[in-house]
Each structure stands twice: as C-alpha cells, then as structure tokens.
Image (cartoon, rainbow, N blue to C red; front, side, top):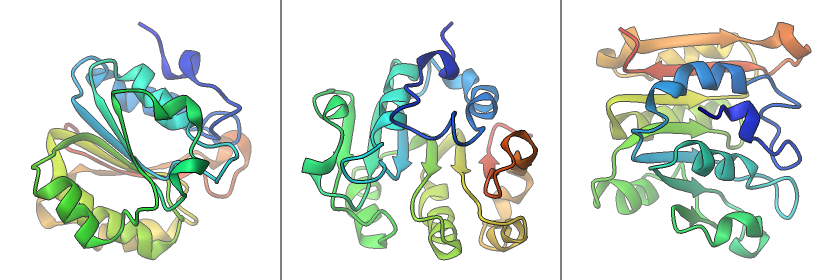
Length: 194
C-alpha cells in the first residue's frame, strides 16, 4: 500500500519537507485510506505558488474519497494540477471560517467528513472557529487535524472550545524536535481514539 511519503510532491506542499507531518498523518489516517468518502482541507496554499500539493496528495491517498478544498485565493490562482480532477471540489474565494459558508456548503447538503484538516491562517481565532464549525461534521470515526499550531499554550485554548462529548478524543503532538520548527505542533480530535 502506497504511503503519504511515497505520494507527496514536496515542491507543492510543505507538509513533509518544511514540516514533519506525513509520518504522523500516515499513522492517523492509514486506517481509512480505502474507506474514506469525504475529506476536507482548509487552506490550498499561497496564490500561484506552492499550492494544491496537499489537495492532490489527499486525492491520491484516499482513492475512494471526494476531496474538498477551501481557501480565500482566487480560482485562477489555484494549481492547475487539481482543477480538472472530478474527485476534487474546490471552493476558492471562500471564507471557510464563515458559519454561513459551512451551513450552505456542508450542513444543508448533509456532508459528513472522515477527515477535516485546518491549514489556514494559523491564528488562534481561526483554529477555534475550525473546531466549532467542523467537528460536528465528522463521521462516527472521523478525525479533525489542526497543523501549524503556533505555541503549546494554544493547546489548552483549543481544548476549551471542544464540545464535552469530544474531549476524550483530543490528542496533541509536539514534533518540534524533528526539524526544530517552532510550529510543528498538531492538535487532533480522533473519534476512533478510544
């Protein structure tokens, strides 16, 4: 079975070469590689530069899933390599942290996610909003991941907005020792983690 590290194009995403996330993500996500139906990443990347790589990675890895990608960048700035994939739904020029966007795009059509990942603006406010907006959209065994947490003190702040029924599923990961990156911190709600 092909791993995330074997599939990644390091020129289009920083998840493996700048950060140290892919071994962790392989550990967390391999159980749903063939069964995931819907996955979402908020944050496609910088306009015209270094974007779309993780979206393509998810489409390649989760072979049976529809991949949703949302970002504030314009559609014409999105990496062409993900635009014509029928399994990728791109929401460009979209504020994924706007409750109305979430309502209209995911709640009304009743979309549930096996994985949601926040790689957006990396602010405490956006991360809290991500938890509040997207954790209710997880499937029974779904997983929510927030990467690039800026400091360990934020972990407690993020836990403070997790609904009580999900608190026992929270795990935090400190990967700073691998590449000496201050923001190699990951917050996870893994409903499979009993």
